[in-house]
Length: 398
Image (cartoon, rainbow, N blue to C red; front, side):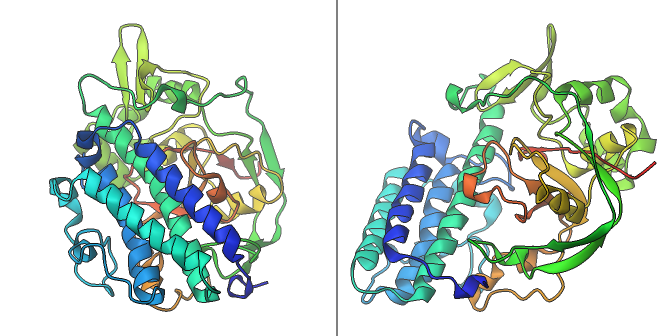
C-alpha cells in the first residue's frame, strides 16, 4: 500500500500529537532560560529555537491552511523560526539563532500552548481532511527529529562549560556485557531497498526499488571504545595512509587526536556526555566520530564501511540493531531511482540536501523509537562529529 493511500485515524492523531509535544517540552524541563537560549556553533541551535521552530511548522503548514479564521500568534515568528523553507519566505540567519534573546523562553512556551490548543480544537471538531492529517503526521516526525537534535545540540553546548555540567544523570543507558564481535555473512543477490508503505516514511526512503548486492560480511555489533582506543594507540591519527585526503587535511587543520568529547584524565581517557564527564567505558560503542574517522578506523581494521544498501539488506534479515549509535556508511546521500519530492513547500524537507552528505543508518540512544527502522536514512557531512555517530564494520569475501 502506498503511503498516500493510508488512512490516519483522527482520534489517534489527537492523542499522539499531545504525547509528542509533551515529550519535547519534557526534554527542556529543568533547564534554565540561559541553557535554552545559547548556541554553541553554527551547526547547532538553541533549545528555545527548537521549541519554537517545531511549533512554527504546525502553525505554518497546518493551521494557516486548515484552521478557519486562524490568526498567527506573532507575525514576526514566520521569519524568526523558519529554518530553510524558501517557499515560505526569508529566514533569520542560522548561525545567529543564539542572538535571539527575545522572544524569551516563557513567550515561546506560550506560543506552543496556543498552537497546541488550536490543533486540538481542529482535531476534536468535525472531520479533518486526510491531507491535514498527513501534514500533522509529518510534523510529529519532524518534531521527533528535533527531540534528538535538542539532546545532541545541548550536549555540545554543555561540553564547552569548564564545569562539565551534567544534563541529567538518568539519560545514560544500560548495555549488555561486551560481546565478542562476529561476522555475519550475506550472499550475493537481489534485494528490495526502501520503505514498503506500511506505516510512516519520509520521502527520501522512497521509492522502493530493487538492488543487487554482492557478497559481504557485516560485524554483529558496532565497534567499541576499547577497539577504537587500540586504533589511537597504534598511531591512527598520525598515519596519513589510513585517511582519505580530505580527512587527513582535516586531522591536521583541526588537530583531531580522539573522538569528540574525549579527554585525557589522570588514569586514562574520559568522555563528556549528557551525564557529565565520566571515565570512558571501554565496553560501550564508540560515538561522536565523523565519517572520515569511521573510514580510517575501518581501514586500520582491515575492513571497510558498509554501503547503505548492504546495511539495509542485512537489517531486514535480522542484523542485531540495538539503536545505540548511528552507523556511518560509505554511501553518499542521493535520491533513489524515480525519487520525487512531495508536492508543495514541504517538498523542501529532504530532497534539496542531497549533496555533499553521507548516509547513516540505524538509530542512537537519542533517537525516538518510531525512527529506528531499517529504511530510515539519516545524513550529515563527512566532518560532523557532534551526533551520536559510530561505526559498524563490513568486509568483502576472502
